[in-house]
Length: 217
Ligand SMILES: C[S@@+](CC[C@H](N)C(=O)[O-])C[C@H]1O[C@@H](n2cnc3c(N)ncnc32)[C@H](O)[C@@H]1O
Image 1 (cartoon, rainbow, N blue to C red):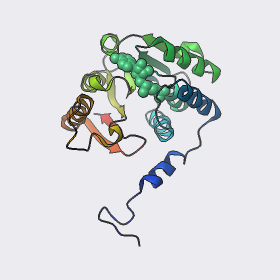
Image 2 (image 1 turned 180 degrees about the vertical axis):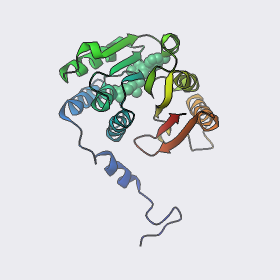
Image 3 (image 1 turned 30 degrees about the vertical axis):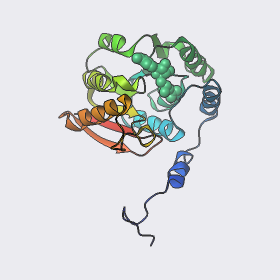
Image 4 (image 1 turned 90 degrees about the vertical axis):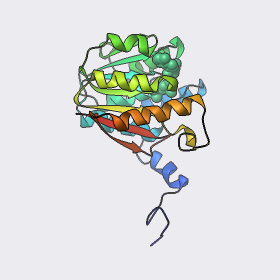
């Protein structure tokens, strides 16, 4: 068997890249991803989208909060796993990607009464949402605010709800001890906040650019 210091079959970057394509992306999602890429808007990875669908289905998500609507790629993935009448509340500071998100969701047949796209800064909007009222919170907004987003997610989630924190590896910067830029420092603090939280059990998954998933108890 192929042995390495990490274990019997340590995955190569090529193998992880292959896992991203393992779950086929539905046609509407592939179109939304292509148009987001064309507009220069960042999205969750393909593997990250499949993970969101899985997690939303795992908790029978009825009420979901998304920080960072972008062009709606993650929203579509969440809806694919949510219960049929589930509602997504999604916040973004930028009007243009949010208009794309609206178009993406409507084109995919999601009725407009199933999503609230709120224009504004997450830290202004989240405090207005109900304590314990949500099954899943996706964090994919301003990385410099991730510590505050996690505190908000702890308040918003019901017991058994999930917080999903996107892109925590920062392309390798988080794990590079010589790196001290502001985003990296905040992401490390956010990871520590989750690790130290007594009401969260977590795992850091090597999906896309790293996804931290935690369940509230
Ligand atoms: C990576 S993109 C989100 C991608 C989206 N989740 C998807 O997969 O399609 C990050 C988004 O966060 C938004 N954003 C940045 N700062 C924010 C803030 N303070 N509050 C809310 N959204 C913010 C940006 O405008 C951008 O659209």
